[in-house]
Length: 329
Image 1 (cartoon, rainbow, N blue to C red):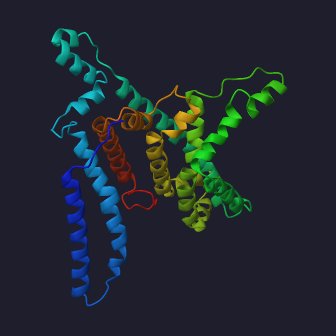
Image 2 (image 1 turned 135 degrees about the vertical axis):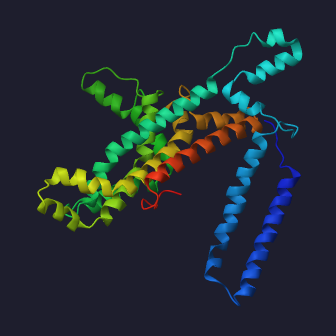
């Protein structure tokens, strides 16, 4: 694996940023003759600068440079054409005629499209399952609402990796589900190492992130609004469609954001439940960094994913401009 060292300007940038941060804090304390309340946000601001902003700058730097630090766009060409590096090597060794025999590769683009499709399915299924659950949990007439909230929280106390691995004991050939099927006289089914198993694992892990924002929005609704709608002649179904659902849109938007973003970048679930038969964009980025050791191409892939996420966030923010759902940045 190739060892990548930070460029010298990165160390200077970290030092200059820290010095500016300390100077601003000292200036603010002196100007206000004491500690201003906004200074309590200083540790978080420093954390964001060092561990969020600087890594993004480094990703952009590596994405637009080669191994020698020279500016290049070949990393992005390699995204659109996964055989670009092979073609360039052949061109340098054997000339243009030999390089021209290598067809364009679409592995990276196909993986991105597949990841977006799986994330869309995961988000849609989570919404279909999560909204009725949140509606039931927020119903003040239901005594079981608080119990269901606890049942959704309990799995989150367990490590994400352990929750995913636990599904292997259920879905594998000798797992519990196949044993029950054979006991009932049916043949065992291939439940592991396919897209269905990956999608099931994604929905299971990310469903709570859809439920709780919607539950929060529904819990804030004034019950008098529903009573007023029923006084005006609406039945429960029309009240749900005309009053409850429109007012819960901020929670829905927040839930969609919190499910779609991690779904499109996940890499552990496809590896465990997909068994290498399914590769998502997160797997591609990880293998590019850790297996191939190509930090430049890996950074380009990461930058493309970051841009897509920012575009998605901007679109979703238009649906919830006031950020009432609580999950929109």
